[in-house]
Amino acid sequence: MPTPIPIEKLQTGIPEFDLVLRGGLPRGRIHLLEGAPGTGKTTIALQLLIQTRDDGKKGLYITLSESAKELESTAASHGWSLDGFAVFDIVPIEAQLDRQQSVLYPSEVELGETVRLIIERIERENPEVLVIDTVSELRLLAQDQLGYRRQVLALKQFLQGRHCTTLILDDLTHQDGASDLHSLAHSVIVLEQTERTFGSSRRRLRIAKMRGADYQSGWHDFAITKTNVLVFPGLIAEEHNSDFDRITMESGLSALDELMGGGLMLGTTTMLVGPSGVGKSSIALQYVTAAVERGEHAAYFSFDENFKTLELRSIALGIDIREAVQQDRVGWQRANPSRLSPGQFAWQVRREVEERKARIVVIDSLNSYLSTMPEEKALTLQMHELLTYLNNKGVVTILILAQQGIIGDVHNPVDLSFMSDTVVLMRFFEAEGEVRKAISVVKKRTGVHELSIREFRLFPAGIQVGPQLMDFRGVLTGVPEYDGSTETLLSGSAEAG
Image (cartoon, rainbow, N blue to C red; front, side, top):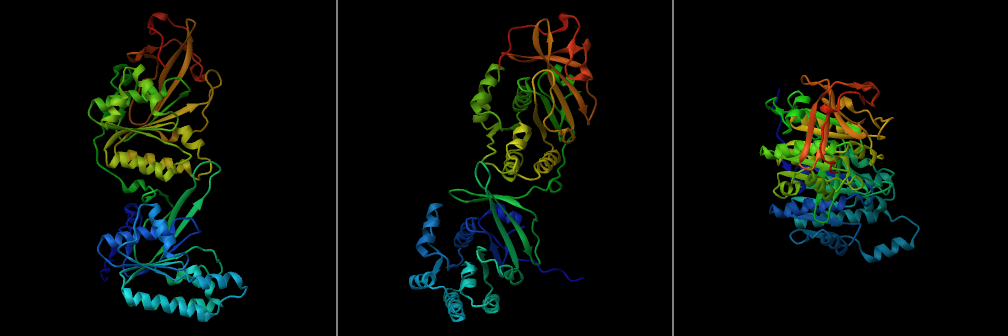
């Protein structure tokens, strides 16, 4: 069997996009970048030519849809300069006025003349990277589909002999025959933009075709910022297996570790379930603090509260979370679902794990992640892939799931316990005229755990977990009643937070 010839790749100037392309665009080939107006085609093309310029190679941007001044303005909005590569503008004012005043299509002679001008400029500049923006204008110049295809095929044959990497943009404004280019191009990249009912629009891309080269299939979220384009490659958990010791992570509270059967094992997911105000975030914060004290990096993603609220909670518990964040021992991020895509969130988590070596990741809360992005599809599946990735990397993941209701008929808004290796149930109970808090473990795949219930309180000096309580009735109803001696209950000052 003959050895396959390696394909030389061209970097696009967008590192994460190069990951999707498994190294970049194949050199010397014709690539089609298509999408409706506003999806980011021109911005991506400019990034490609800027990278070409920075690599010391010649680039050429041929624009048929906007003037060079408009293109310069677009680049300036991102803080970029067009210096260093040629820009050829084929948008004569007279032709624009004639087109607006006439109801007749231009003849094929105009198409042939435009293609001739393109070829002449390519021969003059002899670029290594070429952008043609957009082919839709060539399609409008054609009198019939056959003439258009003939001219585009001639342009392709001319380019193939020059070893020039070409990116052709298509805004799909003229749908008839829009797919003809798919068969002529070596690769097809599709851009898409969707508007949400509330919040920012979502952009995503996919590689529809790439002859003879490997790439990551599927949709990938991306965002256009003021300074660059950010692509968030879709997560494939099985590509991120790693070796790690199956040891347990302790909380720093001996009674809590006893309840958990020694602690939380690396490479597992723990779900803290309970009504609002029962202390789920405080327990998660305790594990984060213990990890930091051991010299490990922790990551905390909050969908529900801002950092000031978390800081006040930590102070009340005797924990200085601000200092840990300032020293970059805790990566705290406020996740705004109205501005965040699932792919971007997964990428943020990956950066904490792969670059900062986070050993514990907290997602607070799962309710907000799922409920505030209802227009997104397959959110549960994406979260499952993310959790599998974290397990493969040996990370302790803590998910917080708030139950609906406070006391009485408390139930889960979604059933995601199948995602978790450990499920910790937290709830309220009443004793001696006081509302108290209880914690128990109802599931642990990776080892033994206590079957009993323990009381816990949030003291100003930290969390306190009491001894096992055996005198409960109605445990399975979800509203346990305590009938035992008050001597075994915790005592102390009022809770903070």
